[in-house]
Amino acid sequence: MKQYIVAGNWKMHKDIPESRIFVSNILDKLIKQQRSTIILCPPFTALFNVYELIRNTSIALGGQNMHSEPKGAFTGEISGEMLLSAGCQYVILGHSERRHIFGETDDFIRDKVKRALQVGLKPIICVGEKLNERQSGETLDVVRRQCDSALSVVNEQEIGHCVIAYEPVWAIGTGVVATPQQASEAHSMIRKLLSAKYGAENAEVIPILYGGSVKSSNAASLIQAQDIDGFLIGGASLIEDEFVRIAEIVEDYVKQREL
Ligand code: 13P
Image (tube, rainbow, N blue to C red; front, side, top):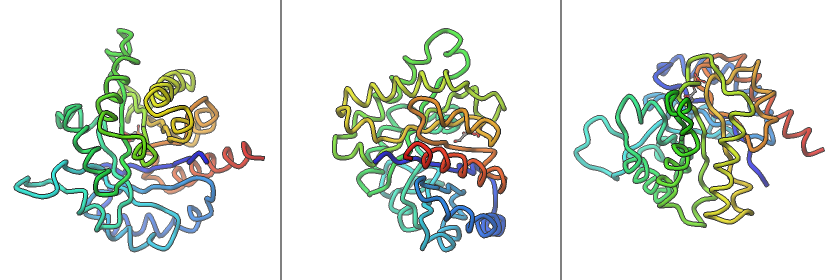
């Protein structure tokens, strides 16, 4: 059965007390979700504290990044094993801020994906084009290149543990959301690529999330679009009512679809 996901990427927001208060305030509402998976991705320092609040619920925890090596002299880095021991099931990899602010390459991200799967974490693999790439008609080429690279280390058994997130860079934190048509076009291309690599049956159930200025006011139209299986949310995931509302919109949509 297809998995629908609502993931909150808190980025560098919320210290430990703020994280605890936020999760405590929305926990009751989030655990009502039955058909969609909620994933919270707080900063590293708050991971375990959030885990303690959600450990016996259906809500999952994700890291925002990790290194490709298991251990070593990599000051400031975090390994997949460390994320696991903090309670994570997921890890965001290749986020555009990692790619474009911190210079992470396709090769480095590929190695992280490999490592995440080796240790038993589910990678949320982020792809997306920059504004100039969209304007010059390169969107699908860029997304294809990023997907091909990250998935070059993923076999047919492992693909079932992966999540893809299409996040156009120009839509992240700008308030400019992709139209359902723009998002759908990229998602459908990703689905086709997955289908060619892993077969149609496998491809159909891999969640492809949209990210970039998702809010409660645009979530309903986006979730109805072809091949959009949930959201990776930045700014709106930091606001209690907004995050809960978006989760409810996705849950309602999934339940309605199944009627
Ligand atoms: P915003 O929702 O703030 O645009 O951020 C999206 C994002 O980068 C999620 O990973």
